[in-house]
Length: 283
Image (tube, rainbow, N blue to C red; front, side, top):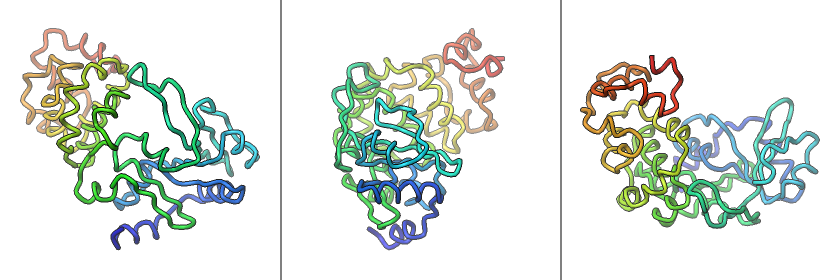
């Protein structure tokens, strides 16, 4: 760990309710960590938007440890602990069986090993865990290094990660665009080879990722990535011939940028509706 990373972790401002839940789980004899995007953002020197917790405790053990717990996704190991009016999402360490539909695992198996839990995640920068009480960082796949080199890299095999979940390919492009990172060569090469799984993803999910990409400062590069990897042809073939720089010249407005993409389309409203955007975006 670099000195900078150590300092950022040491100085990280964690909401009191989150610390209270972590302490409660540890006091009850369980492991508990901050995981995913909040750890990534802390190491980038950014303020996390959300704080997700992972624990070795089973959902029923979490329910026993706190007075108010909402079973938000208990079948997948996720519950929401309410502390002083603050909702804190807590998920049991888990490993996932085969993905049968390109989006969801056929079953979820609970674990007591944090590294097993991290191994099922999409990218190395999202596969880190941090215990702010003991200051312990768990980084089994080189997430810190990839943050330093500004690289989007799949955990272990890119082919396996994209075959499991078709949305991950689009997320790779979106993360690269929003964070200003590059995609690791092996990870990018796996995208065209797994487009058949991407086709199974719900349009609403693609819409969410593409919207974030279009409104990012590096939208031009992101658009080129969707075209280069073959993703664009799968969900918006009407925009294949668009000059990418035209997006960058347009105001940072979703309706305007979609209009730029569909400038030569004979029926832009139909395309916007097909992509599940609100009617007001299409008009």
